[in-house]
Length: 144
Ligand code: AMP
Ligand code: ZN
Image (tube, rainbow, N blue to C red; front, side):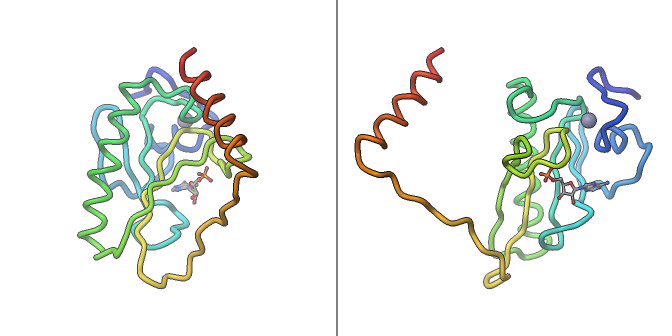
């Protein structure tokens, strides 16, 4: 079945349409979860909407909620299945953030103590004024 919002050049749409294989772990009418082909750790799973949306900006709110519910279900499943010490939930949006496949997807990544992965470095605000200014800009943007 071709989903309403389908991009025929998109590799994840091809997975949804069974044109290329994937190892599925969960599926319902609007969301699919399958193993990442190049896992950060074994069990690394991607949660995607069956309709094609590029990233978090364009996924409709209700569908986003469904994806998050599946991400939670999958996170708990992976934790139990591979006895993960921890789980990262990550989403890359736009190339600047490392997005390579432009069909929205949430990474569910099992972690082990001392698995060698390094967390990203942190910066500091110059001062309290800069901190407040940035928060104000975000609040303004949210109230649009
Ligand atoms: P991102 O950088 O967030 O766009 O991540 C894309 C992810 O998709 C990468 O972790 C890839 O390993 C994964 N990926 C790409 N092609 C496939 C595929 N055919 N089946 C499963 N995972 C894939
Ligand atoms: Zn797609």
